[in-house]
Length: 236
Ligand code: ADP
Ligand code: MG
Image (cartoon, rainbow, N blue to C red; front, side):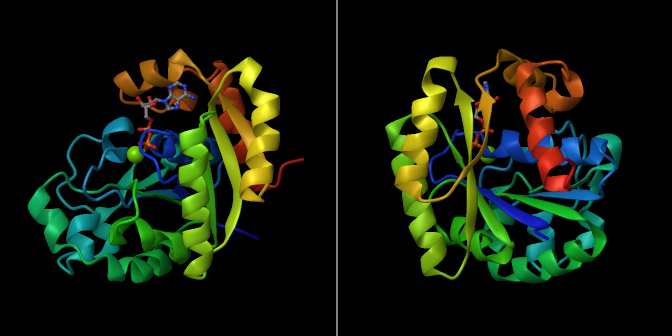
């Protein structure tokens, strides 16, 4: 069974952090021990959107060899475990991404499900997380540029020995959904796991520093996130 997922996209702003925060929270709502990790060490924002207040020890300190993983775990809604990144540039410089494998090992012993939120681009901080999880999930928007970037990440992932399990089409509009699903599957050669609609409640929740599945559970995007989480948890 797949338990550790890397949420990637190539392009920034497709919804990686949103997907990580909401799938993590939805699985925690279902009672699953779940952990989400912000590996976007240059532009950390998972802790912010999850509403964490003070995070004196983060993934930065752990990857710099200055702290243990357990000291960087914070509790979110429904018992979700969150490992945020730090906001300082110095911390980013001191962190050694090579240590991420050990962090993963430690966290898979503590959690049933693990999600890594990765930075955009193809720098070493973005590339390393592509191989440390069981599977990469690509987040794609209904735009050609996002599809092209996702294809690059898919090729890169396979070149370095990782596996892309599927795609989440995020910010979908009604008219775009069907044709896009087919186009994405043809282009990337992996299944579209599910679709999350464009939904103003996602931004409203982020402004309130909470995931939409917790803040606005009746919204359309929340329904989609819960459906994806339920499938991951193996619910019929
Ligand atoms: P990334 O982590 O890939 O850079 P984010 O998750 O930070 O992307 O999302 C970028 C912006 O898009 C954020 O302002 C977020 O609130 C918004 N967003 C993400 N998904 C949706 C959605 N389904 N509907 C509306 N806005 C969304
Ligand atoms: Mg992000």
